[in-house]
Length: 259
Image (cartoon, rainbow, N blue to C red):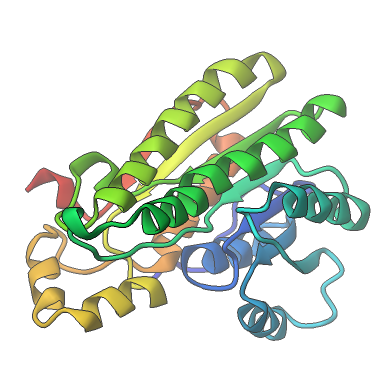
């Protein structure tokens, strides 16, 4: 079951930048925000995925652009946000969906691997959010930021100390940003997905015999999430429907943290 894209959220007039938009949750959020009337900048380091997204959206949509962004490169982030501002206007909604997971026993995590995961998942979120917020504050634009953590940022995972730590950091970053930015009428919330059927998760499931059946057994609702399940929560938080919601972590996981 997937979310009905015929439903839309009140995002008309918003300028939404979405990282990690070439696939998975970010891609679904970009399509749903666009359907809801927002101008959307879909950015990713995956050029091939962005081309595919452009084809799905169609070339006649004036309120949609793609751009290549490396969220781990602070200078590249600033340059990309400047291009988005020139094309669509000052960003008023941000979704930090770029991320990477990896399976590695705790004793085998190298400093390089640790830094790679933390740099992408946590530092990348910080770089993009800080750059966008500077624009919002300078232009007195109230806005909404949605970060993406994980159920594993709360529960932890065997062979995932680096990933879980990075995603726990995203939750802490979200709360601190929400406290500081409320004075500027900028809301900051976090979505923490459980097992969502994305290309990233499929790579993990396919690498471990029996992982899919084991994962399903831990979800009370009996299915993995679909990207649209998360996109609907993200677009709700971006919109004025969540106008009095900030500093929260919404766990969208089919009940998996209950067992």
